Image 1 (cartoon, rainbow, N blue to C red):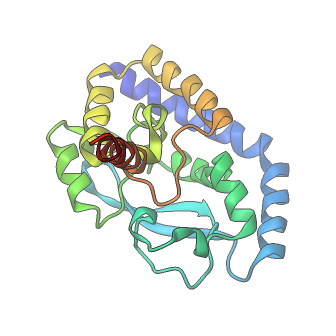
Image 2 (cartoon, rainbow, N blue to C red):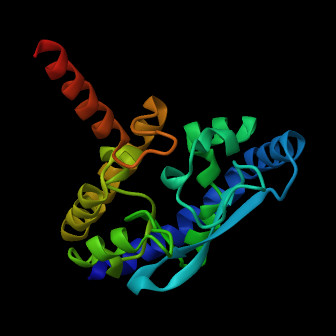
Length: 214
């Protein structure tokens, strides 16, 4: 598609401008992280890129250095215990994702696209295969991100990623971009340890209500 070439050019230009304009914020966050806890400022993690290739995603570190490696947050027992004070703020505001601007610049990622899965999230990778969502460049944010984020079950997340692949266009990317801004401001769908957590809580509440009425 012609748009995919234009999309890559836009990624390069926007990420370059972003790195320059956000450099003061980067410096403030680096200092805050270093003062808050021991360990490196940046966190690297192996993720799945286009055509299921692997790359190291960059994030500002939000968890203690003794956190189990290569484990999705939703699979940690009581993930809150590992998150630093500054990390809670970074995760809530999504500022921990800012270093991925570098991943975008060098071609690992795009601004808009399916969020890159962990290399060992085999269930999510397999589900995305059904919809061709592993064959596009993963994104900083995407259609699934503005439709539930952490609360989405894997099947729903993969289906939304597939819908993005079908509808990919400049206008749809704009919709995802501005939808992300709204979601971040409202902190929609941000749940520590949540993959389908809201749905599970809702189902549990409904079940308890039925038992009470019985």
